[in-house]
Length: 334
Image (cartoon, rainbow, N blue to C red; front, side, top):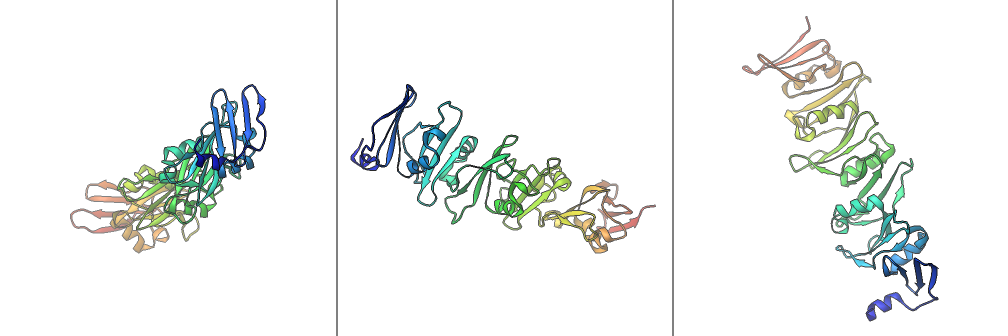
């Protein structure tokens, strides 16, 4: 042990403790030395040692299976494993966040994401969610001034990361207790390479998503509208990025989202029509007529080809776009 390491460990403050044939330890001023047949001698020290003791020491976390190691982001960490081998955890420390515990699948995913070099440092210990079904850690990413990322785990979906503006949107909705539920994907790149999105488990019947782009910010899609948006390839499809969250129609019966695609696009839903998209010139005419409050009512199909161009069917009529002339006409059903 170097003089610097010896100074960090301090002096012995007690005799070696033999708990059983498989575990010995000895306390020092700023550290504790451990021995097991599997790990040989390992040391937990400094601020990580202090947090280790606060969390119950080896009785809760198990024994250190590494010494204190330098992380690529400038901090330090030590790994631990319970005596039965069932739980692997680590305590990470940085000057910005202090020392915090990361456990199990969340730890594995944190390291898959690039841990401290790209995903920052934990700003909380691993905690159970209020509903008791999941667990999470919050993180501070390298260039952030405040906590801006999280990894949430549940048994069905595993660990998934949420960060930045999407995380802010999800937090404002009530986290996993809100209408979006738990994340079922990490933050993913949109097909254009510009936007980002996360998928969520929604209400259990239908998925939900939060989609972000620099131009539109972060907006949510949910329920049957989210299902239809996914069927139409999400931000990579004809609808583009959402420009609103899901909103209630003025008549109080329906729901809708507006999108960037095709010069203006929307998905409208009503209990008696399901969810259908309308966009481009057909949508512009429907908007002029008064949307769902017009004589046409709600869309009952998406836009499709017909011999003269494109058409959408509504509850009480049709809107057609004629390819040759560019005319857009609307009429009642016969």
